[in-house]
Image 1 (cartoon, rainbow, N blue to C red):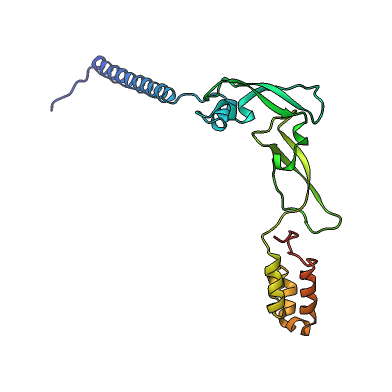
Image 2: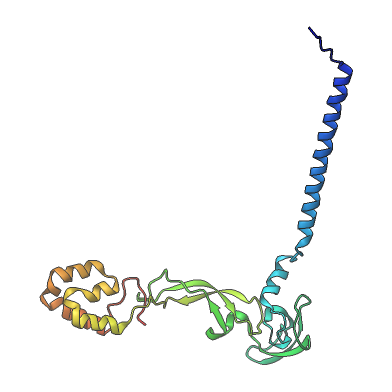
Length: 233
């Protein structure tokens, strides 16, 4: 029988060699991963802060400087102006904006705060959570933003109370025609969203004609409207 003698010293050398190889591979992989991360991070240029991103999206490059929206300009307004009077303001294009033409020019404006602009000069977020046909008329508070070409004092975004006057797309003429022709079957009530009354008219044959006649009169006077509280179009 042959006896295999193992030299403990040689075995220890072998184990140390294997460990050193694994350590070098792990450090090499970590270095490569860090290098790849650095390359991927530098491959895309930084967009800057949120304000710069907003200006980049709003102020399109190649536009005439004088036609840029007010968010792209810095204008010096007279804070002590007389309300309703015409004034001129010196405007300068912001440094982050790329446009065509002179970057310094004069703009004319009316002395007023942004919340005092006309309805056609600002855009408001419409809401349909109120009744347009209630009495007295309901109002709701919403966010409004001045149009980009309007120069005014104060904040360009503000809150405003608006009368509830939204529409759900129901046509008065359609409702009236349905009431005259198919009102006995409740078609007008179904169209306007009054389902319970529509079922009642359907099974009562329009209240033997009396209910049909009443609904024709109510719709013709616009007293009977959509069930969602909106206005006719």
